[in-house]
Image (cartoon, rainbow, N blue to C red):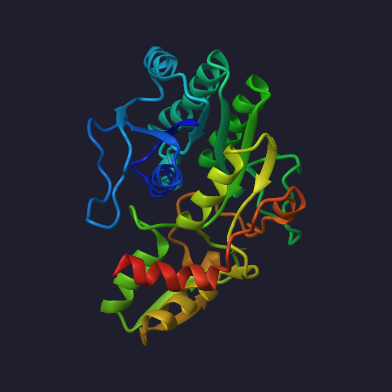
Length: 304
């Protein structure tokens, strides 16, 4: 199967391309940079052809995907700077990338009759309550610009295609790029105490594990909405930090604070990022390992 992957310069796209290639699929990666800009070492490389592509350039998208004529597209490219999206000068750019860019990909997928998998987020929900969000819950009133742009991307896919997967994820960490674990371990090495919010609840997602699931999905016709994070229970960012500090061996004191007490975020954050993953098992997909196990493997692989 020939699979086109956008956003391979990011955490997830990098792992998706490598998983596809390892499983014998013909993978082609793309991103906006002229050449692949992710990690390059002897053990972790993107083992597939690379094509430069600006997803907001409709003609370029039509040309690249039209010429490649893939069987499937995994759309990982997105604006993901949640606080940066609140900048009045950036709002239009965020929508252009996450909504209009996704529409361009969906239209091109339809033109070549390719199935499409779109990565979305828990931010499409309003983040209130304590009930885990189910894949078919209606998305109303996202809390911030980023969340609205990703919801608009979902709608672009669902209104354009019949052969699509929309997969919502949360709290992502991977080898390629920045993430919460890398940031907090670096801070913990130079500080005796760190403050971490304890009233935002969800579950982490390791891109290496997620990539396997996404490729499993794209090999089927089990279309629809899904939620995918690691197993292991719902936790706070405080709980998450305590666990990876313990596994890493850091003695830094972690102080739990409320979102209001933390006070550094520009964009509103959801308190409830719980995603119900039960549909994965119901339709026959293998769930991801526990987040605790994922942290252990990540720390060994990342060599922080």
